[in-house]
Image 1 (cartoon, rainbow, N blue to C red):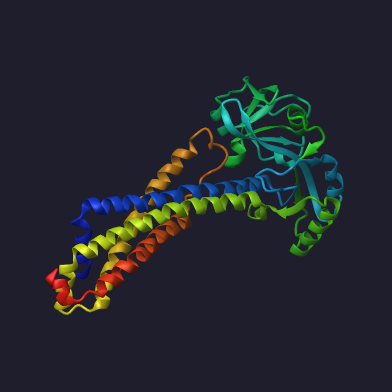
Image 2 (image 1 turned 90 degrees about the vertical axis):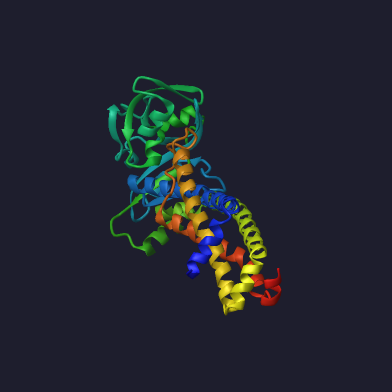
Length: 371
């Protein structure tokens, strides 16, 4: 009988206890995959949206929330005249409850600004001009709201016709309601207000020049910040809080898994006292007994991790298609997250088995044989 066979047999001969322990670990790891996958997914979705639109710098008055505060639209003009700024456009973006959708991105964009350029009309048309009271829907937004060209959308107190369905090349774009900035300002009672100035830089702008430009923007707009598109999410306090909450909630579930594995391994040691005594009597070293118990707990962690990753991935796919989430983000199911989750499960197994392993290695062969 091989070393691995002994380990495997110990788990198989107590299927109910092993199964319940795996359930405990799996729930913890599934929570990690689901919660962290959602947080990472939202961050990556925003980054991809900015990349598709072609934003190099984003000026906003970002506070602790997900969306920044509004500020005066007149700030765009002095920013557009700064060195290395090739093009600017103003945006008013908000997360609003729209009809049956509890949360939807609504994006009011300066007419003829570059943020319109990547939108590909799938059905219908674009608004005729900046003042036309109409919206276009991203493909996912149209599905969530169950709207087609010719229908109307209730946006705050305004009822606006849908004139087109567009493909925005990114999940957040496809999940958004898009309209001209002036119509958005009127519909949400934010006349003359925006919450983003999107900037395209001149080709070949150096990092030093970007840093100097950011400082000049800060002089013009002391309450705001200009951040590179790939830094917007990581620098936002709201995203950091969401990320921390995801890991904190996951940690509680993992602690339950630790206690479950430790309880299982302790019971295993108590029930196998006689067997361990025989192994010690026939020449097994105490270190090998310790390694055996640690390997059993690590194997429990590995199996629980694989099961948990599978459950978490299934849960994310289900959540991705719910009306509350669809169109806001694309959950992250990257190999990095899955490997981290399985590694956490194995570490949980090893940590949980430390005390039972130490206890088993300290047994006296003569006393163990009498048990």
